[in-house]
Image 1 (cartoon, rainbow, N blue to C red):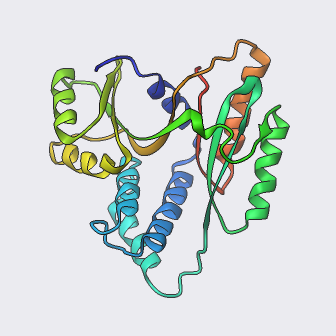
Image 2 (image 1 turned 30 degrees about the horizontal axis):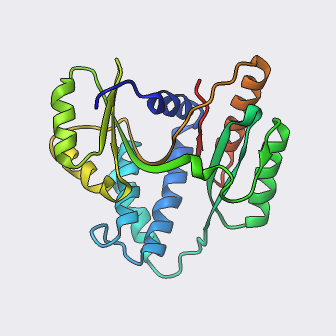
Image 3 (image 1 turned 120 degrees about the vertical axis):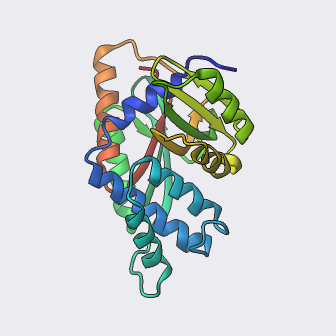
Amino acid sequence: MSGHSKWNNIKRKKEKTDGAKAKIFTKIGKELAVAVREGGSADPTANSRLRECIAKAKANNVPNDNIERIIKKAAGEGSADNYEALTYEGYGPCGIAVIVETLTDNRNRTAADMRHCFDKFGGNLGQSGCVSFMFNKKGVLEIDADGLDEDKVMEDALEAGASDFAADDEVFEITTEPEDFSAVCEDLEKKGYKFLSADVAMVPDVYSAIEDEEASIKMGKLLDMLEDNDDVQNVWHNWEQ
């Protein structure tokens, strides 16, 4: 079950372009607010989406006070935020599959921005479903491997309900079914593990490399531009770098 994780490599490279910590906090704050509103409860025990968002926020070192303040504001009356979740799919250079998850208060603006990003760097914005069939939704947790015993971490992860485990020299990657993500996070936290990242991700079935250097540069710029957009929450792709 243990093996080298291609997803971990892509995920870490993606995070290097995520911008300043404050920007990450802002994006996660939007997710928390939407999770409260759409889940109908500020109680994470009764709102599975909120539990997932809290796990992600903690993995990104969002302070507990910030998390609690955002949840209270979203649960209170008079919150002006009215974000809509929209997902865009398309192809980058050389046919790389890309999924972009957004939260927006202006769908026309966001749609225009997404089309501009893809067009600018030789990609194509497609129809809903054009690439999502190549991905599976999975909970993905990453733990720094330094000083930890691989067999022990794998045993603890599987006992917590994880579906898969992978390792390289630096990171242990734990995969769960989406519905098990929060429970696995909580169980491993109780056992003292700290996460480098924790998210319900779109994981590709097949990865594609780009041999052409110019196309590779364009693909990197496309991802950077998408991730820098204030409406974009997550960018998933199957580019093997």
